[in-house]
Length: 443
Image (cartoon, rainbow, N blue to C red):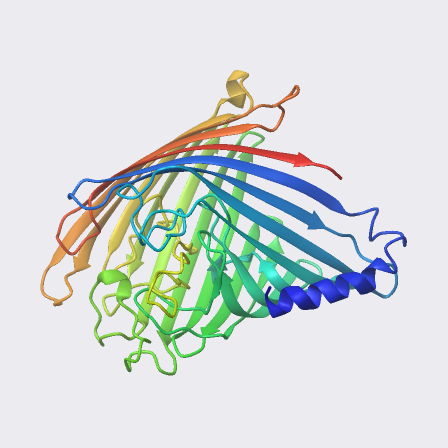
């Protein structure tokens, strides 16, 4: 058990003495989430295919706060993944869907436990533990497989000033979505890790329709990153709006990055002006027009020529025996974080669009569908001479039962096609996912 989880367990014993007090118990929530998932990744270039299915369970307990000037509470999470089908030959050893056994096949099951202690003073909350799931411009916890990615460390959020939200924290470890273990924090291609990811930032609602953001983060010995964002929603009518979303990242090297020893960034498999170093500026713009159940989104993204976009990614970290930890699979705050590819290599200019429809407008609430297309051009070869392109097409249908005994039962069918225009691109892939979700609340 992790040290922070042990600390939370001790804290829970203390909190239990006041559990009868108003708030701690009365505001508690206990829920069990179930996710059944079929994952089929067809490698069109002749590499290893990935065809597996599994069952995931997530038990969440979220307490209220004890009364008083400073209120205390605790959150706990238990995760359990069960392998249903897909053995050796259909389970690549570096799979981020299931952990791998010693013979390269998927393990039968895996589990982990995490917990956070928390405190609240006025409109400020502090969380410390091993079940953190940030959703911020500089770090997005991934929940794209059976079990979610979580982090260990401490965070603080303050809303003391009207219309202003301040977030800050320090993280030390990550728990991968296909792992029972924790790892240090790292970037794509690096085998070394760090135990210090510090961040801080603010979201300011300048007007009811306009939000401005600034965030700074530092993964020690890897990179420093600044983020600027602006979101504006122009309401045309009750069922009609136009949304503008602008994002800009400026990332640079820190500490040992670029000096070898496992600290090199592979620039997402692409070109780097300085080998192994983080050196990137990326901007993106998205515009969405909504009319009734229709939504049309168009956008463009530009990655600078000197190196690829960088984000927390533990996929290259291995254990003491040189085996993959199952920590792969991470998200980032760009519109091109798509179903299969990222479109984040040096020099890449990506145009993208998506059309979605909510069938509630036709009297079928809970049914939604979307189709998206992305094309990246001007990607620099690793040599720096010449460019190539890549594209992806994604389609998705979701339905959630709205009433009756099975209310809340959700189904999701997703299909993606990716094609690269070079042997330096990702492997051509056709991917299908079918997911069934259900959450039952006890409290």
